[in-house]
Image (tube, rainbow, N blue to C red; front, side):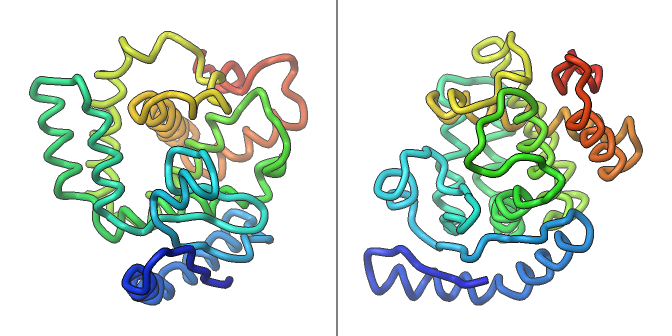
Length: 247
């Protein structure tokens, strides 16, 4: 896989090259893991290491600086950028839970966390997801987003980091439910990205938490995937959330 750089200054290029070269061995090991365990047979051809503005304003209108297609992953590797984005979820929120979340994001977004974000994007390339990136789907998007979030975290985070991140997601989902909830998991789609950061991540966190519950219920990620693939072949008129008994 090639590493490309979409940057505006020599200093940014030097910084991103240093990050990419430091992370390369762990990413190469992760790609081998994805190929062996999750049928990632055709990974993207390149990772484009870039800044937040180029990723979200110049080359795309996607508001989060990490996304992928058949050819490349666009990714901003700066922890400070991700801290600022995550903290925006707390706009208008107060209380002990909000303060716990704030303290978490101010201190816990390090290299493992950054790798889990990139791991999320690379896991999208599993052949077990039935549609390509250019196809439009109306059901089950929540599952893919929740599952690739789970896979990326499970690989790159320590058990303690994984559990703490899940706790923060539960707190956020509970805090944001009254503002953004009240609808099906199946509403996850293109319109999700039209909102603010809190509304966008609300959909990601509750999708991840749904997948986490399913892994406990089924006993393993692969068992959940097997049921998912059965639904893809014959949904029987049910949405995926209905298939899994989540709605």
